[in-house]
Image (cartoon, rainbow, N blue to C red):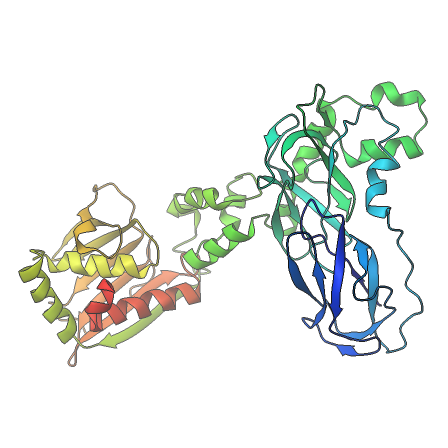
Length: 438
């Protein structure tokens, strides 16, 4: 089935885009990810990639043409001949969404239109995940107005205009067509800001005017549609901002645990702190079904011993255990980590706040550690694998040629990439401690 290539919306203030150049000609083969054309708005120029493979056909706009957002420019077809002329979506289509349905409704305030952006070539609709502003709120152009989910990602969308939120024309959990006006931003503070659902907006075209008295019990649509927000948990979808997803992956955090605990979606960066502080018992640490990770590395001990002697002489830091904690905490790749160090039957907690050795302090005994360091250098063990615990554990043992480092954790605590990076970084610091200061 042919894929429509549409003019994307690169910003909320964008109604049209100018085609700078086509990188492919009609009939050319294209692969997914190939640059099809370059488009320019009032703020930027960017390349637009093909969202599928096939042949470029049915091109309806040339270089230099100004094309409305959402209009079909071409198709990606299975054959070079394509399927004939692409239906022309009229130039005023994106603006009709308010004009055809809402201009006749005097309740809709006047102002700048905010449309559902096209975030991909195959996107027809977008799901409103969350509104960050409420009707009547003041906004600046750079403020995040709402979050939209497509089949590939969740994206934060800026307001694009300075002013006040005069109308929200779609509820959270509802889908709106690309190019549809979903909000109005006015210059002056509105006397009666509007909030309504897509269903309410479409009702006048299908429903008789008689039941109009029951059409707008304002709290009812919000209450009834609000459960659509956590609904993704039923089909295993997790709604989260791209930044939250990326940081969760880097930290080895499982966002589904928040959903299991009933924490409301969508998730943002601030929710990762909640996830990190969830009781460890919610992850089935001891069950036979829990996937565990155990990786090891061997390094020379000369580097660390020489560095510990230097640190004691030059900085007054005579506690070698504190150095181990500093190396482990920094290897996690984030600031303000807590390291529990076990040695000689005692446990001490350290707060690591960066690479500077002077920033290392002891933490309260009731603090939950991010990683546990087990110093077994002065024992007789040559290897260890005791299974994952409530937090990732790095064990340090003495071998005939130096030190053996073993990291054990669960798959829920760290993904494979994070675990490998942690142990590799820690091993590098143990073998060449000067890199810790760089």
